[in-house]
Image: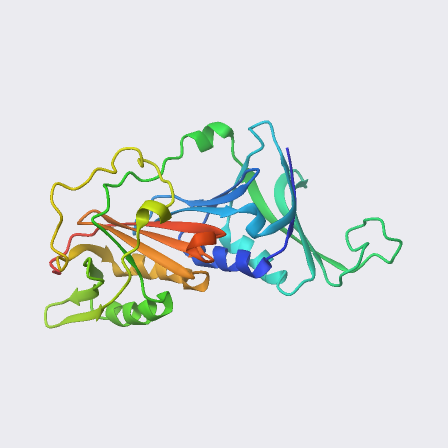
Length: 304
């Protein structure tokens, strides 16, 4: 199997990994002929999962991949190590990423040129070979059978979709609410109201936004497992002011909010009392370079 690409947008790649770095110690990075997928699906205390799909041409140029598994390669690696490599490449004029084997172990090898030139990576050009920095990330190559067993969480049809305010603002509010309770209530209505709330023995605090956009998900929602099950019309339309809600671990919600570093648009889907699904778009929704999909399971709580 072979994989090699130039990283054209190092900062965007770095921000994507920064968004998921704290979720778990190891994640799956799967390259195909057209996309890169990042999957965080280990069982954790908070239950947060991420299934992402990023267009290869949103990050790479001179993208080449070959394998006996339909030209797809899946790797298990530490996101912390990958982030460190990307940080070391920040500002470099040329960065090559390739799959290699060193000292008997598979690695994602970064070759970082400190100066741009026709011969920086040993190509023909007749000039001097530029200075290079090498940074290797240890990986385990997964078998096609391992990937075939991966399944996205099955969720009911969302009760409501809503465009979230800027995630940095939500993060500031959630950080404050975390000091009061461990469980956060998230509620939204079709009138564009969004409410975050916590309740403890002696205090109840709410923060509400109004006039949030209610998107048309028929054209914007990425495909997901179980999509074919239900696009049925509801038996009766709810009142526009009816609030649909879910209770989440505050810690889990803050982990999702780490994606503020890459988010331009984020759409939240509430499956009442079951889970929250969050689509973090990389770039404009109409022409997004990719999307990070977060699944956060519900927590039982007395918060209304």
